[in-house]
Image (cartoon, rainbow, N blue to C red; front, side, top):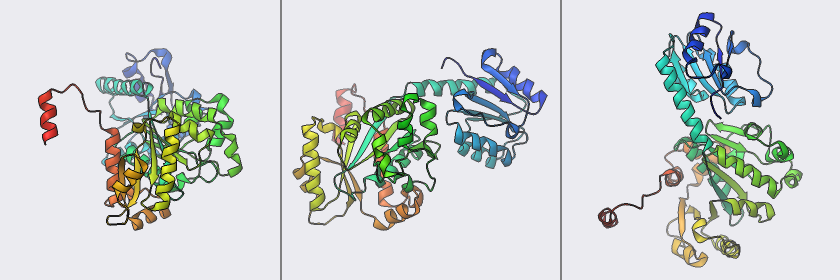
Length: 392
């Protein structure tokens, strides 16, 4: 994108002229359109490919009802940027605007400096997003019932909320996937099978409009509701979806399920990190060993595999060092057992961090999210700094 496309909307001719004049020096005239009307009186554009990228909207006196059409548009057009103007800004209005995904709320009379700064922030954000190279994280069950779907969904929520990352969650349990139920009671309008059917016209707009927005930063590509449609998705489709998702999201979390086939192997090949999920019982460890042997035969480097122990209890017959010794790999993450909170989260379809933020499971997921988002440690520190850090 070379520049911003802006549509200015106001029912007040004086306000409209004021807003247009304020952006005249910052945006070429060919990139600007204007509409003299209230936003709610304008019909919804039929195809979001043709929607202008920035809407500057006169919200009058800043009433909460003025935000309702903005909220509806934000649900449909995920790439739209909203700048609102109003006479007064109450804390309630600002909070609801933020939750709706509004980028800026400015005041009348229009301040050219404030406009310049707002457009600069939007340009900077667009430049960063166009340079994204999102990390792909694959969750694999060592055995059915390991909790891989729960962990994938709740880590995605943690990254999107506490860490403010843009996150996509793919449900690749194509026959019986239910990842969306762990996060929301919304039903998907489209699924990964529908996107695969139209893969020949895949672009960011088709892709994003096929996802369910759980939060402004978390979008879910749901599994097909009809198990027979699992065969509609091919490894080539997955390759195209992951490559596009990398350019749009900071993290792409994929619930791979348990079956290893051409499609899931394509996911594992493309993943930056694979998280096998194991519990501390002999059947899980036995199947975990088989999975580790498979990864070894596939020549996956050990630093790509991050083993996760779920439902950990101290004092059992099997300890962490037994698992590491048997599987030949270090345990990277330990999720404690807190059955009541997890069961309540699953049954209500509410992320555990939202439902029970003091649960030890929530705390473990928060630490996991922090590890994923912290900047890499600089290697050019002096020997004294490294020595002191290692000592303390």
